[in-house]
Length: 74
Image 1 (spheres, one colour):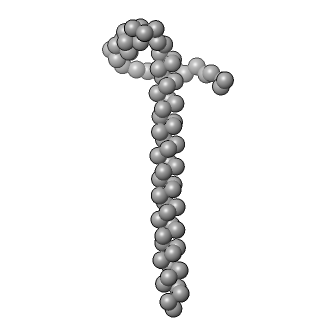
Image 2 (tube, rainbow, N blue to C red):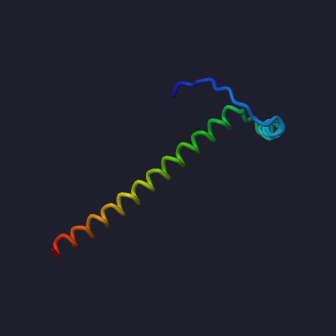
Image 3 (cartoon, rainbow, N blue to C red):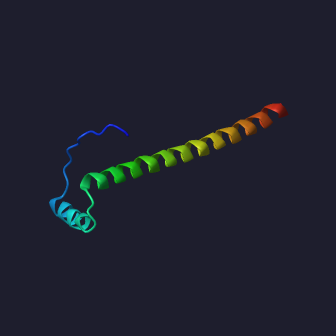
């Protein structure tokens, strides 16, 4: 289990009230909700960065192949 840390955040009062009302319907906690959103954010960003890196690597490889063709023609 990972270490927990307390974080203070500022949110819109009305949104907070609505969120608490909805969470109370099924006994959820705000900390669980925020934790889930943070995990999702991190995972999504990791996937996007990995995907972008793979695409960049593909383009670099393609450029290297083109350069090699040009150099061998000389």
